[in-house]
Amino acid sequence: MKVTIYGIGGTCWQFDAEESATVGDAKASLEELSGVAVREQRLFADLLEPDDSEVLAEVLALDDVDFLSYVRRDPEEARWLEKVGNSPFPQDLLRSAPEDIRNNANVVVPVLRRHGYSLKLFSAEL
Image 1 (cartoon, rainbow, N blue to C red):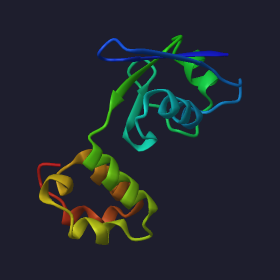
Image 2 (cartoon, rainbow, N blue to C red):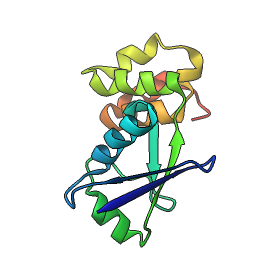
Image 3 (cartoon, helix red, strand yellow):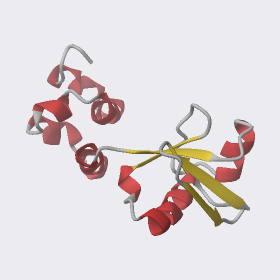
């Protein structure tokens, strides 16, 4: 299948993928084409951000779209997401994180999904 990804600046990338390819596979292909690390990529099908494990063909069919949209994640945010995702105790990492990371919902919410009791560590604004 032909995969098309558009960046918000108008850049377009196209590549062939297997029918069984996942969103994560598409990110790996995009990294090869664009040079942007997978951890810094956010792909959207319409307004939804599918999980990396979802099958790409199903995502596109479900949302009745024929392309994905790409947004680049802030590199520091991406590094922290990777750290907390790989840590058995991500709440401990966030205790020592810079304040802007502790106030970043994109980093905090995945930690809370794993360790809900960690809510007390984060800002009230979240």
